[in-house]
Length: 68
Image 1 (cartoon, one colour):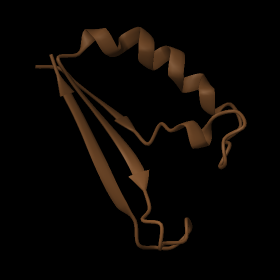
Image 2: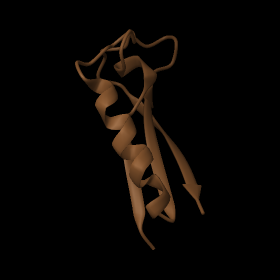
Image 3: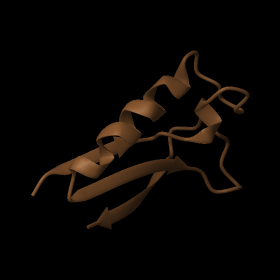
C-alpha cells in the first residue's frame, strides 16, 4: 500500500487567505497530479476552537483519511 500524507494545506494559506503564504498555491497542482497514485491519502488540517487565539501554543489537529 502506498500512502500520501498531505499536511496542513488550507485555503487560509492561499492567495487572499487570512494567513496568505507567498506562493502557497504552488502545492495544489502537484498534489492533484500525484494523488491518484496512492491507495491511502491522509490530509491534516490545523484548527483552533473559537475560544483559542490563532497563535497560541495549544493546537489540535483534525485528521481526515480517505482510502481507495
